[in-house]
Structure formats: structure tokens, C-alpha cells
Length: 152
Image 1: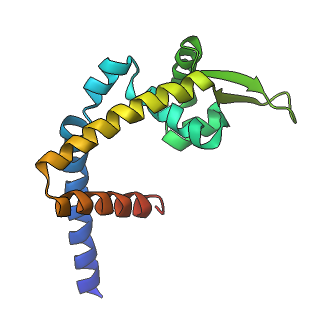
Image 2 (image 1 turned 60 degrees about the vertical axis):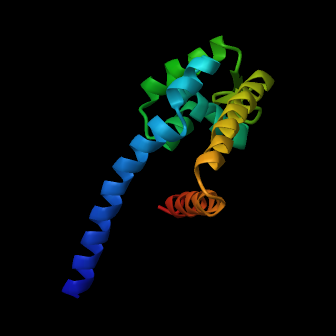
């Protein structure tokens, strides 16, 4: 039993260490968020909300704040900026007028497609540096990470 706990702790420590390294590498070398933000004039936090709304069409401010584990008072100004940019809007629920949903607009979907195209171009460039096996391995590893993390 002690061996299992020791192994679990060692694996947990390794995962923790790799999370910090992966986050830094993703931000700096892989996705190049700063250049994407500059190119498209939109912060990563806004892109994340657009991507979420693109998947589900609409959510309340409370649901968005829960999804990102960010306090509602911090999500509201972000949504206000997306509204001012014409990318999302607030719409009253048809079943309960007290409920206000945030919905992605066609301009928001277009902006997200443009950002995705830039990201796709960045990723395609990696094929010049990585072998075909490494490139495919990276795709498989990211799929595994995404699938595993969605279960937590």
C-alpha cells in the first residue's frame, strides 16, 4: 500500500512539474499568444469565451464564470468588451425573461475562424522543425492530454 502511495506521489509531482513547463512552452513557443493577440486585436481570455460560446451557442454569465473558474464580476466586463466589439450579445431567455444569455454573433464566429486560421498556420510551421513521427506524436499526445483532462 505504501508503494502505491509513493508511486502516486511521485507521478503527481512529475505531472505538476510538467504542467508548469508545458504552460510556459505553450504560451511562449507554441501558440505565441502575444503575436496572435497583436495580430487580431483580442486578448486570449476573449478568444476563450468566444470559443466556448461557439461550441454551445449561449451561456449565462454565471455559467461562463463557472466554466473558467473566474468570479462573475471579472467576466462581466470581459463580456461587455466583446459586446462593444460586436462579437457577442446579451439575449433574454425565451422561457424565462429573468435569464440573460450571452450569445456569439456571426462576427464573433468570423473572428474565431480568423484566429484559428492563424493558429493553424503556426502549427503547420512546426512540421518544418519536427519529423513526421514527432508531428503525429504531438497530435496524438495533445489529444490524449485533452481527453484525459476533460475527465478531471
